[in-house]
Image 1 (cartoon, rainbow, N blue to C red):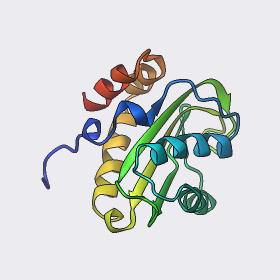
Image 2: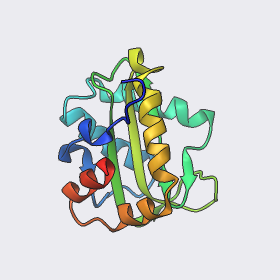
Image 3: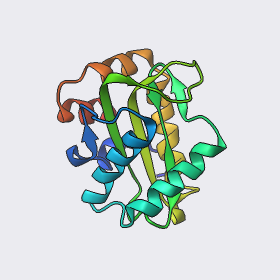
Length: 154
């Protein structure tokens, strides 16, 4: 698996996607996406996970620009390393590299024991996708969860 392309589409399902985030703030959005992770069984202690995400947020901005944020938490509260994705119809204030709000949030939930392996592969694959302006544009225009999963696996 060392040289294989890591397939994000294999670790995400429709339960981990919200196409119309209700949250208006960073805290509300992280809470909303953490609910998806908890309901899907990937996070077993939501409060501990959210605390770990905010600890990481204190280390530096996770808003990478172009309307995208990639907050993440490495936590013992995570049962399965995965991501939850939320898209918003409204801009969400976030500390970003370009100073602009976000409309797409990819929340990484990483098991402690995956911190140096799967986490890095996941981050690398997301970074590759997000370096493509066409991907970001396509992500913002998906109409269904299935379209987003298909886009991630492309």
